[in-house]
Image (cartoon, rainbow, N blue to C red; front, side, top):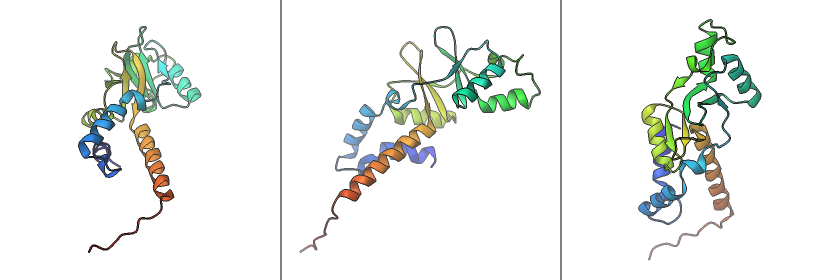
Length: 177
């Protein structure tokens, strides 16, 4: 499913239930903030550690992304397993002598935790990223929002709706007079 379709589904969930479209958008915006959806247990790295240490942490924690933070927990970069493969291994660099700040993606995309999920998805689409870092009002790390996590959440919600519908008795349609 592409992000256009996902954003449309989140915006136009009026087909579920009997609320009006505008009321559903208000409800979704009020209840579906990034802070309620993001992953809050984020594995991070420091800019001055080696690529070897970062790669070992990824393996140990079973993650493909590390948020790089400064001493005050402000995100300063993002490092992915792909970055390690392309910027270290494929480039022939020694991982034990290459530092995270040399290979990370600097100035990572961020959104505030109060941002409505629809706006965050629009932001991700316009920046062509699958992940954004979630920050608080002081720009400190709060979590990570990944497109895959949003899709998992939607799948759970649709499954719940399907279960509810399957428990209901089918409606009989009466012919019009």
